[in-house]
Amino acid sequence: MTLSLLLRAMRPAQWTKNLFVFAALLFHIPNDNPAMVGQAVVAFVLFSAVSGCIYIFNDFIDLESDRANSEKQDRPLAAGLLSPRTALVFAGGLLLVALCVALVLRPLLAATIAAYLILNVAYSLRIKHIPIADLFAIAAGFVLRAIAGGVAIQVPFTSWFLLCAMLLSLFLATGKRRYEVLKAQTEGECHRDVLREYSPELLNQLNGVTAALVIMAYSMFSFTSRHTPALMLTIPFVIYGVFRYLLLIHVAGTGGRPEHTLIQDRQILLTVFTFAALVVILLWTFH
Image 1 (cartoon, rainbow, N blue to C red):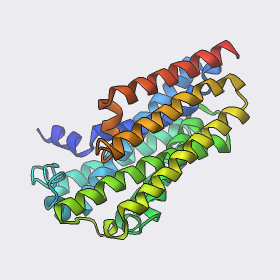
Image 2 (cartoon, rainbow, N blue to C red; image 1 turned 135 degrees about the vertical axis):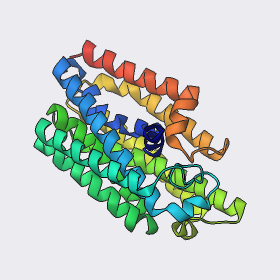
Image 3 (cartoon, one colour; image 1 turned 90 degrees about the vertical axis):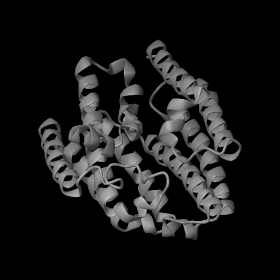
Image 4 (cartoon, helix red, strand yellow; image 1 turned 30 degrees about the vertical axis):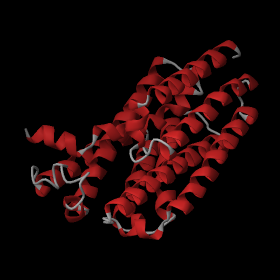
């Protein structure tokens, strides 16, 4: 029972964010081998373990505010189903194991995971209360995931590749903040002080700007990368995915949980799979 509660507290649904670890592997597909695939999988598991421990720590920090939040009050710690002491001891032990495994696998990977851990602890304690900085902290976490994927399989990556990761995460983060601000205004209660620093109008602008930048950055990546120029054929799928997500945010009223949208919206899911398949086909064909 306790193990299932600990697993719930680690929020497995959020681990889809760690799929960024496989980005370097995807764009290096013609030169991949089974060992590299295994290393990428291990990096994904390590990031999932570490991020799960960070969620436990964050739930401990936000225990009282989560109990007053209708969407978060059922979490194991907030609901009183899981002892904070047990959760923190488990998280500490799992973090130690994950860092040791990463150190054995690749010291630079361990350093990247440690940087991700430090960033997220700083986010939980302070940065999440600072408007704009909170969005960039979220984006930095995605960039570190992308870096870790390249480090794990020892392949280089371009600045455009990292810029795409950062801008995409900013796009998702602004959409999430917009949902949270509107929900707080509708319910008449704000459980996070930083939400008072934002307005829907500002977040609409930020969301639109980051959407345009995502498309531009990916287009530049496909033009200037060392891969085949045929990657330009994947640009329409990126544009469609961005437009579809904008529709979900501004019309359907979703966007509060990007990880759920990725799984539940069939068009987004189909676009992602088609994009990935086309990248593989183009890289294999024109290698």
